[in-house]
Each structure stands twice: as C-alpha cells, then as structure tokens.
Image: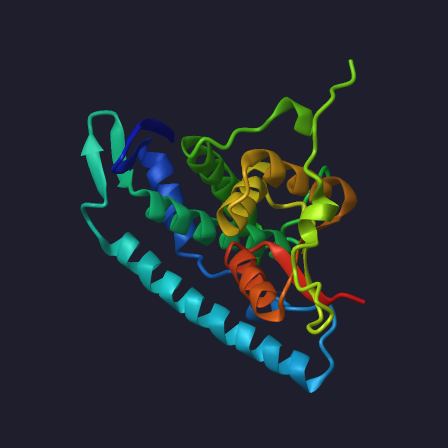
Length: 160
Length: 99
C-alpha cells in the first residue's frame, strides 16, 4: 500500500491484490473493542458518575453502530477499489481517512486486548481463538502508518 | 549530543479552566496503551484539541514515557466532550475532578 497522490479533493492509494484482500478481511472484524472497555473515570461510584458513564456508553455505542454501517457500505461498494494494471486504487477524502483511522484503531486495540495486552517486545501467545488478531494488529498498524504519513504525520528522531 | 527542544508551558496553559472558584475544574487525562502508534496519538491530539504539532508531540511523549499526560483542565461538559472524542479514536482517556 502506498500513497500515489494527494490534492484538495483527497488521497489516492495503491494496493496490491493481497493488500486489498487483507484490508477488507480486517475491516470485517469491526468493532472489536468491548463496549465496557471505555471508562469515563478510573472509578465511578457516585450516582452522578454512574449516570455520566451510562451516557458515554450510549454515545459510543451509537458511534460504533454508525461506523459499522459505514464499514458495511465500504465493503459492499464494488467500485470502491478501481482495478489498474498493477493492482487497485482507492480514493479517500480527508474525512474518510479520519473515519478509517478510527475504525482501524478500534480493530488494532481490540486485537491487542484479545491477545492479552502484550507489552512492547513481548511475544504475543495467540491460540486458535485469537490467532487472527495477530494479523489484524499488523495490518491495521501498517495501514494506519500509511494514512498518517499521507496526512503529514511522520515519526521524529527525537521520539526515540 | 543532547538535543534542546522548547516544550510548551503546559502548567500555565492548563490553568485556563474555571478558576473563579465557583465551579470545580475537571482534568482530562490520557493513559498509555502501548499498542497505539506514536504518530497516531500525535495526530489525534491535534484533531481533538486543535493543537500544533509541537504541543501534540509533547503530550504524546509524556503519555509514552510517563504513562499518562494531563491534557486539559476545564469544565465538566468540556471534559466529557474531550474524553468522548478521544475514546472515539480508541485512546485510553479519563476525566477526574481536580482535588
């Protein structure tokens, strides 16, 4: 996957046939983060805090339903990927890139949770129930990196 | 060679919430989830708070190196809004009343 061009209308990315398959397979996993994962506060005990938590969960559930609907439309649109000689091209507007980042990171974080939240450098121990999460984790990370680079967000040497 | 970078004056900037004493302030905190890409966290901070790259990177590095970063000190409604926006991007964000 790589950025071919960007202009005021948005971005055009190139995918190989395998990359396209992997992205579409991965998107079908959305949503992957359990609803109870998001907490407004580290410990909610008072009635006001519990009510705020309930409202947050409702709002996030609605957001996820809308995202799921958009993922389904994305997967079912036959002309989403335009076949070219060397693979496929995908055109995305800036809001679509933002949406795709949110969806991919849900799948990435959900995969990480399913793999037991391994620390950096720690080898995940997948089993037959979550082995697919290892691939999803990598696919989401790769696609996110390309999308972020297209938006101009690059790693800085001083981060290390 | 040691690199010198100028960091935002976070403490002063965070003191823009309610300081009248009439309304308690709420703190928005982002916690480290090591799975998130550093570029991703930087980008989300820029989008949600409208920060420039330098300030977003400063807070991203604080999350990365210290495990958490205080992102905002603000009203209850605004804190809820920020936490909701950060969680839409699957960042681990919470809010708490300033003690």
